[in-house]
Image (cartoon, rainbow, N blue to C red):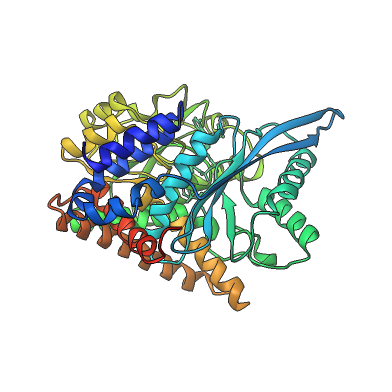
Length: 444
Ligand code: NDP
Ligand code: 2IT
């Protein structure tokens, strides 16, 4: 049996029931087949793949807090410190009722290759809790964040592990967690990114994932003789990534006609009015349905049907496995020719294979959404220097990084004989740097 197949079987056997983790590992290993075969003896001897698929450490803990009615609530908290070969662990914290060890391991594993692609010195990690911030008061969110950080603070640090936001974690949550970390440790250091601008945050971090997604999309279109201006775009989700992907796509002349949340989607054939969405989502923490109450001509539809809206370009920006084979076929038959993933692993494996086999342009999440973590790394640099760069400076660096990621993915795909396959290209290019660092550092 080939080395990659052996390792995949081992992962399934040793991590029972962790289906999202299996899915993420399988996609990467399938892409790495040729690279591994070319170096099989060397990698086998060093048990490189066995080490690559095993997190360096998983911390899991109890998070007790008191709700507004005076009841004690208990959640599960985690931090998966996956790989520190190229830098301190770096990756977001997710607060969502679906969070479990499998989901955080898949996210941590993806983060290792994504962070490598940015070209910056950051290893991979991910954490979070099954706490549901929806419907909670600010005080309840603060109580949870303080309890979560009381335990997490023992395992993180500016040169050790630097968490940030992900689903359910934005500026409010990072603020509460930062305050508690500082109080517990007495350190004023860049231990979290996505901080507010008054206490060490970076300009453009809020926008970075969505903007970066559109920068790499634009680059991919240009290299394939197409352009973004005038195209119709459908974006799922209406959180941080979706909102700033919409903003940049509109700035570059595209028309975004649909957004969603976990209840349903809105369609506005005149183009989404983003100020209304920001008011609903960023200020009122409301539901996307409210858009149709406020904007004449906009239509709200309950349920998951967003991929039935005809478009040229689809940008899934909500969550994993939100776009399946049937959705992929519907998109294609409605004329969609480009998909770029703002979320982590939003397309199922069958959908991804369909995009590649049917000749659509497809940019996978670990390349397409890397602008967020890249800008987090720029926030770390500013914190270390005790300086703040201008919006224009950070944005220009972000754009440069995304253009470079495109080039790395395109080049690796070319080198391994699969030109235009950015899934293989991103996985291979991400792997090469991590593998070299792991080989150089010996058996650790
Ligand atoms: P937010 O919490 O800001 O927004 C998440 C959006 O996705 C909401 O509209 C939410 O709807 C929807 N959503 C979440 N879970 C589900 C679900 N199970 N089913 C349907 N819809 C769902 O998160 P972000 O925008 O930060 O994250 C979105 C995606 O982007 C995630 O996959 C994340 O891992 C990825 N990502 C984020 C980065 C960042 O910098 N924030 C960087 C790179 C990737 P509802 O409100 O109804 O739950
Ligand atoms: O999935 C991701 O890359 C993020 N949620 C951002 C991580 C970060 O450290 O900024």
